[in-house]
Image (cartoon, helix red, strand yellow):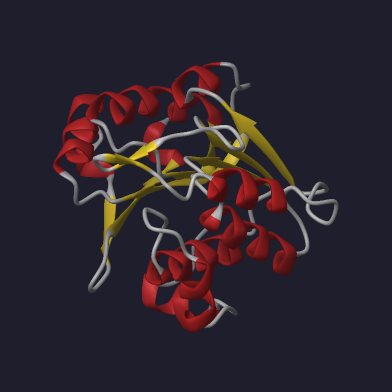
Length: 211
């Protein structure tokens, strides 16, 4: 369970990577530094045993999760993205010229030193979640395509796979489509939002609210 306010959690679990070092390896479209601070602090505070990441992109958030799990001394991560290593994708209006980032970052994260805690999966997030056993995760980080249909389709799966004492974090809940997805799934009043200055906002759903 979470103890204290979000400010308490952040103060008690400071992200050990400097903003300068984080920015040096960040790729456009990835989470921002303040997102990383929240993600790291939540995992450190909750000490989850089974983590599901949906929407790994080039692996920046995966790196944050790996750091938190290492520092906790326990835990496993399943990291899913629809793009496989080296696959071409579109970012914005043009094909991403830094396509090597996807293959390089995600492959580096699955180095021998990380194979003990992270499993990288490629596929459709909703279809993959349908294959997961009930109550199989106690922490979920959702950062997929932020589409209304994706969010509304994932919530019923989260009801099943998230343990009652677990939480799910959603990235960019300030986007209108994400809000519509929450509304369609009937959980708008159950989402706790954390607005971050100069960046995105993160929303939290507790497993107990989805039972």
